Length: 147
Image (cartoon, rainbow, N blue to C red; front, side):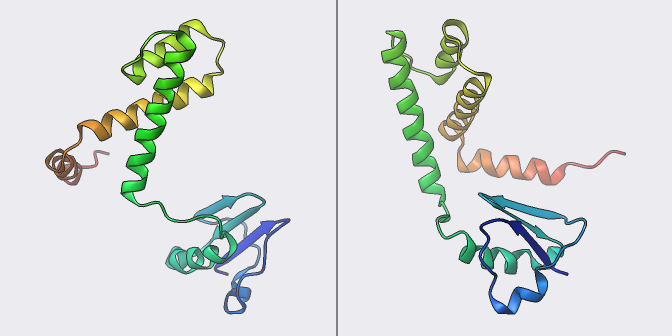
């Protein structure tokens, strides 16, 4: 059994995969989207199942790195513009927005968390260089597991 699909609005997988769509108690990978939960029971089949998911999840398109960087920059600017208007003072950095939102509003914790995470992503993208990224990867490869 390679995969199983649960959901109320799940179209059938292509006929070559129908035998793979059966119930199994545990799976190493599960993908959830809208009304469907797809379990991938064999790690060797992840690529194949994800290819078939492209047929199930037609509104998802891969985001390239340039798009992601642009999106973070645009959302950062939009949040800063919102804060400028809402608080009546310029916010040059997202950490200022986080502090203002925490102190002066009754914002839900989830919004504060999202702005904090956006601040971390924005800060990383502003300061990362090809050299620093290579150094990070080299450091990770040098790590040893300690039992």
